[in-house]
Length: 376
Ligand SMILES: *[C@@H]1O[C@H](CO)[C@@H](O)[C@H](O)[C@H]1NC(C)=O
Ligand SMILES: *[C@@H]1O[C@H](CO)[C@@H](O)[C@H](O)[C@H]1NC(C)=O
Ligand SMILES: *[C@@H]1O[C@H](CO)[C@@H](O)[C@H](O)[C@H]1NC(C)=O
Ligand SMILES: *[C@@H]1O[C@H](CO)[C@@H](O)[C@H](O)[C@H]1NC(C)=O
Ligand SMILES: *[C@@H]1O[C@H](CO)[C@@H](O)[C@H](O)[C@H]1NC(C)=O
Image (cartoon, rainbow, N blue to C red; front, side, top):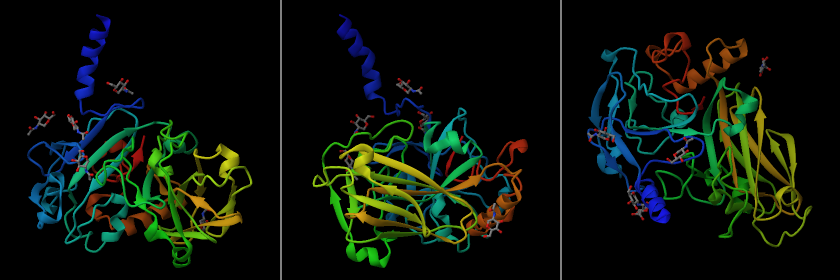
């Protein structure tokens, strides 16, 4: 009797496509410009367009380039619709992951808004457009928020899965509880690294994955690169900002059986920041993650090197986030950083900078409704 009762109770949960997580279940998948609700091949249901303040809808000029219904139409905000080009959603106070899909001219890639600098041509004069908007609640303690505080938005400049092709929501059926997508590290390897690199992978279970507060997926640690010398990555960024780097490691080569069997240094822009012995930290087939903040970066490139000490370095993933202040009462050096960011994003003046036209007037800031990011 009680068994039957439980079964009936859990049935609606099993059938419900809604996300269910201990850190919070609020999520929105909005097909901007779309007039019907649709479900994509990854089983995500996209809501017809809503929560916008104005603008007009259109179809992408070459819809055949785009596979999914939520990518075929868009909302744009012509000049005549004024400054308030917004989506305003009812969100409980928490931390969120934002991701947008934007189509621009003949550009036909998927981007997260952080990559908007790649399509900077013309963006200052043409109307802002948005193809889809994805918002997911994430753990309030994720990405070291207890240390960093709630004054910064994390803007993604690269989220690399080493020795793998691109995966995650919208690209593959692999799950990531925060909805993160992971890029292949291959295009970020420097030419010397390309010559010496080996990709390795395993199907073994990796312990210590999908743990609060960051819920890093197991798949991230099931592939890695190793090599025969220094592994080096270059990522283009914007200077004069602070960057939060997350490093992901797992010893997935069963020939390394003890600590001191594989040791390497992590060097960020020529500064040696950490000596890593993954086995000594967590043993083998276990995830080891570690973060580092680069302050006031003086160059437009972040270079990360893994330098052998004993054996060859092994790396599973690296994440690069700019720490963008979300408060407009900023310190003088942050004003410089924000000007650089504004310049790099080519944010049109009419979209406002000294106060986001979409934000409640008292809380004007960059990003509250414009930048894809994580924020409290
Ligand atoms: C997709 O969702 C539907 C209902 O929400 C479910 O019946 C189906 O099994 C899901 N498919 C996959 C591949 O997860
Ligand atoms: C998310 O939904 C599940 C199932 O409905 C529930 O058990 C869980 O407590 C929810 N999480 C939060 C943080 O509310
Ligand atoms: C789409 O789904 C939402 C939520 O389930 C519903 O409120 C809305 O009426 C649907 N829209 C259309 C056009 O069917
Ligand atoms: C994801 O899974 C569904 C159901 O098994 C399948 O129809 C779809 O082709 C898969 N998508 C990809 C990109 O593998
Ligand atoms: C950041 O670096 C610039 C020069 O690269 C320097 O002028 C400025 O004072 C630095 N700001 C901080 C907060 O260290």
